[in-house]
View 1: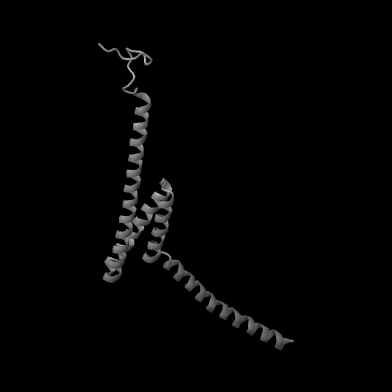
View 2 (view 1 turned 30 degrees about the vertical axis):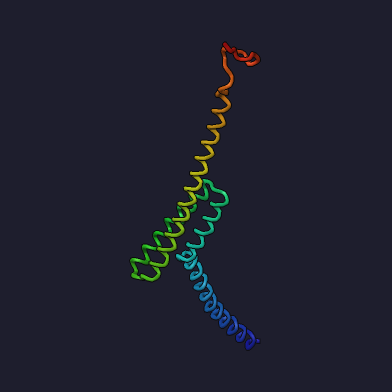
Length: 148
């Protein structure tokens, strides 16, 4: 019986060591994935998703999410520049610029549409309030105009 408990103890110790080795490896892999989620390429994908959502349904929340994503992207691009990684810096700076241009173009299109709608509504309101030039307040509409 003592031999079996000794071998059980050896198995338990080796299995714990094995678990700690693989557990730490799994923990390291999870940390790498977490760090990878904050990479410039994942930020670009996030901006694209937010921009698509903003184009489908422009509202304050999606606009703010886009602005936050752009701010984070700017920090990441500056970090790449500080590290001296010119290739990655240039790549992500250009992608960020292109997406920001698309965002501002969308904002301008929305502003143009809102302005045109405002002008159209104002014209409709003026038409409702302003009498037609044919009607004269001094002569009833049923009488024929006098001819002399």
